[in-house]
Amino acid sequence: MMAAKGNAFSVIMNAQKRKLADGAAKTTSQPAKKGHWSMGLLSSMEDPALKVESDDKVVIIKDKYPKARYHWLVLPKENIPSLKAVSSEQLDLLKHMHKKGQELIDKTEDAKHLSFRLGYHAIPSMSHLHLHVISQDFDSPCLKHKKHWNSFTTDYFIDSEKVMEELEKEGKIADKGSRNDRLKYPLRCHVCKKEQVNMPKLKAHILSHIAKPGDKE
Image (cartoon, rainbow, N blue to C red; front, side, top):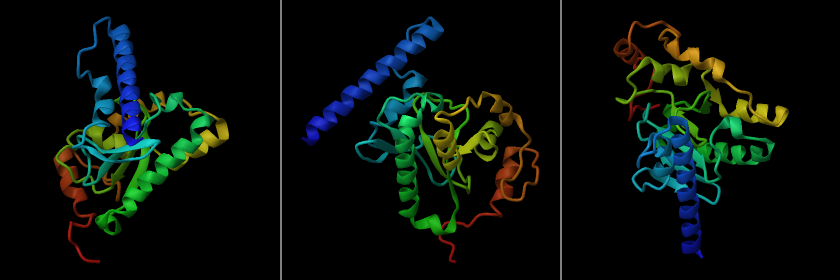
């Protein structure tokens, strides 16, 4: 029975990859190459090096380019390209995704020393709906650019609970495309809001606000 489920999931993933590839080909008028960026998350969902856990509804993976000490993605097995495609029928799924993300935080040994956020990007760079679960230390060599920083520290990053509230109230998620300008906002510390001139100075500054691994209470 387990093997049958695994095979069924592989069939679904392969079908979704073909669908994304077809869409990419129509958009660019070029055949989508193997490994096209739009297929990245679907491939990662099957990568044992990235996969953390899964159940009948979701797969949890490590972000391939984490922007903090802890950065996971919770992805539905259902084919949902983005928040814009979500309807009230998926409210329970989003609640389940949030629950699984919170459970992961609760199981993390360093969680008591760090704060976390669960949320979605207003304009995701990758196809397939994904919930970010990210620690607020932002202590990672992969955090290199202003757009990385602002995508997690402005309202470009939408808290999961707000998304669920909007979906429950409105039955859909409004287009957040107008928030694209947030990526160009000045660099500000997410704790004290002090503006910094560049990423190296910002990263050095935020270290003063966060606990180091192994710190005692």
